[in-house]
Image 1 (cartoon, helix red, strand yellow):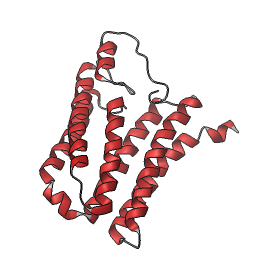
Image 2 (cartoon, rainbow, N blue to C red):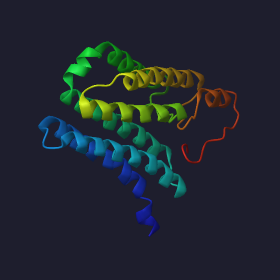
Image 3 (spheres, one colour):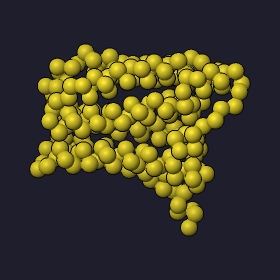
Image 4 (cartoon, rainbow, N blue to C red):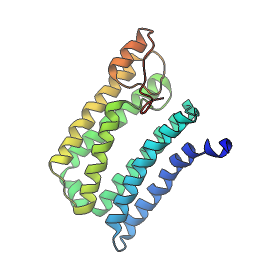
Length: 204
């Protein structure tokens, strides 16, 4: 039985790739109730992201490889959701192009720094970044539902900049690549050679 159970985290991770394809398909074809179905897929995708890590830690199969795969698939999922939202609500994206380019540029910069310094992608899974993910979900759902978002979009924008700045700080502090670094403070402790305590619910 265990050999089947330990496959669940990976299946949950790969399911988000399927959701990403479905979101893009629905956004392009726009069948009846497509907005509702896309938002259902977004929520389901987030839940799969939450549970894949929890189950992996419970089954003691939370490896570096799995965490790296989780981070990469997350990027594909959310970028697909963003692309889908753009296909549905082009006017909103054109009106907020400057802010979106700043945010996407900050996100890209974290990866540039990580690849230059460590030759690997970002997989810090910081706690504040998880908070940002919740605001991304809420903002995208609002945009997809009505092609508009005001204070929620701005909240997502500023939290995004703050969390990207934190990740850059973490990357600069780390002497070698690490996954599951909860915060900038924890990165400072790691740099000093101290052991850190990770939240069993949210980090490996």
